[in-house]
Image (cartoon, rainbow, N blue to C red; front, side, top):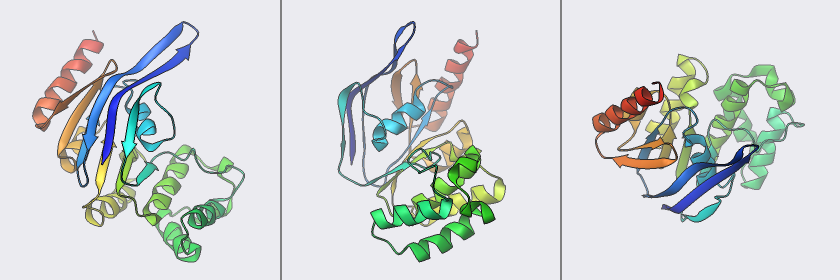
Length: 221
């Protein structure tokens, strides 16, 4: 279970504090898949980082009683001075896994070729995301955090990601954010919308989509 309890997140700016998340509370049980919709800047990625533990809330608490992945399209925890393969070895040692098997999987899955032997500082954002996703798949988590992974790579790579996540790990919990509403509809059983720091929940996707589109129309006026 992941319990998010009255979480607020504030970032300081030159013009004053900016409230990103306002009194957010929800529970994600084992096996549940929650999809979050929202416009750019609504706080979706911030929420994902808080749930992962990469950042801490300004106030409120997040309780995790199951293992949680890092955001799958986020490579911020990697060492830029190390090669892709060295990062695989590093993560494998932390989680006490056979790095040789993991390297074989990452090489095949990412299709990065010789770039796996280059330092991460030479990687594009998309290449880092491919590596982050592949390394997430070599570690078995109870809950996966998915941050716009559908935007990375081509159709073939999307199919590989979907197979690893939704076929092989269908019993896991997932927190998914994406601008692709079809992706949310296909893979989630609960839905939420982040808008102006506030979070609302829907059991029905069509209702969530209608409200999401209304929010976009209002923000474009």
